[in-house]
Amino acid sequence: MANIKDMTTNLHHRLLILSAIVFNIACGGKNTESNVKTPGAEKSGKDKALEAAADVIQDKSPLSAFNVYLDGFHFYNGNINAQMEAHHYVQQLSDDLYQAIIFDGNSKDAKIMGVEYIITEKLFQSLPAEEKMLWHSHHYEVKSGTLIAPGIPDKAEYELMEKLVNTYGKTIHTWHTDQERQLPVGAPMIMMGFTKDGQLHPDLIRDRDKRFDISTPKKKAQRETIPFGHVDPLANAWEKGHIRQFVIENKADSAIHKHQ
Image (cartoon, rainbow, N blue to C red; front, side, top):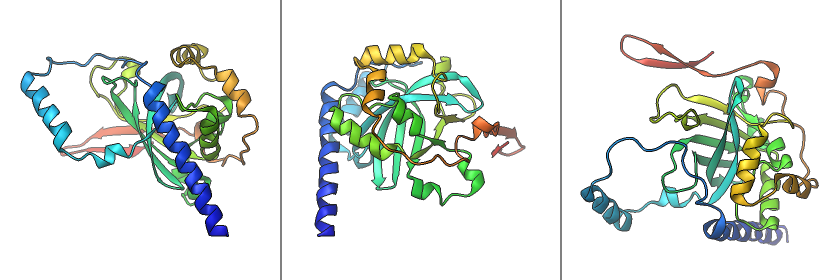
């Protein structure tokens, strides 16, 4: 009986994710342009022809597995006033592990800003103390309504958020398009998520809500009944003044990245 119940629950979850995919395709995107224009000359006719041929011939299995779309907000670890919207395209690798490609928009010209790895509380507790300080919790993003899954039915989004509320994310941005960087220059940056009211700039929420025709306060109210446990005190380390960020040191034959 337990196995049948587990199979039914798993099937129900997969159907919800399937509905999320269908609704995302229908009405959950193509309303947010990239922050920067692509530098360089226009693609040649030959390049376009090669792309068209490759699109038909080549297998893209890894990309096709990124089938859930989340929209939220990040800030640079150590600088909470440097905030931006982040469009996540997510693949669930297991019941405890997700990976996401982060874009600065959801249109075809969107730029890849970075990546995020998402793990459950169970996996987070297996990490050493120093590693935990690189991660942020998702409890506030979920409960506040600032993290959304555009275009999917409220019930499907609610159940998805139930799974995400107790997870943790490790996020690194490599292209700082929010600073109107035309190219992916500069050091990679560790990002953090918001943890309480008053931190996220209201204009970012208003602009996002208008584009997606949603209400963050309404989503917050809908999620009041989502339960969540405690947040590990080593996560969101920036709140206690423990900032971790990349430093690039020039050496004779290499560039070494290390944490402060």
